[in-house]
Length: 119
Image 1: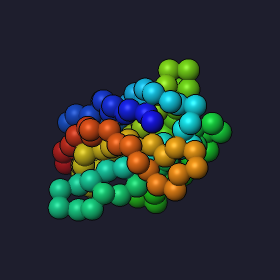
Image 2: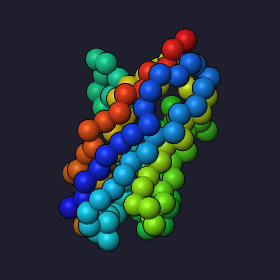
Image 3: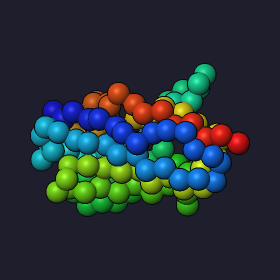
């Protein structure tokens, strides 16, 4: 198992940028992929994007494609979400989540970090 902790959230104006970090501890050798999710007030949690831990391949939701970039630093056991050209509709609690090798679902979640984009 791994443990996850997000940081880097805050208040930013529309058009601005933020970089979120996800610190990973525990059995990183068993990691398959990591994802960033978000949940806006009154809405269901949605996948923002994900990265394959070993190969680095990424996937993004259409709503953030071209604006958000996911990366990881294996040596630092960290994952990042660079968010550019932020919009008010990006306001949400952002979570990182992990999926282990041989598993079909994300089963470990961080505590979340708040991102507020003002218009």
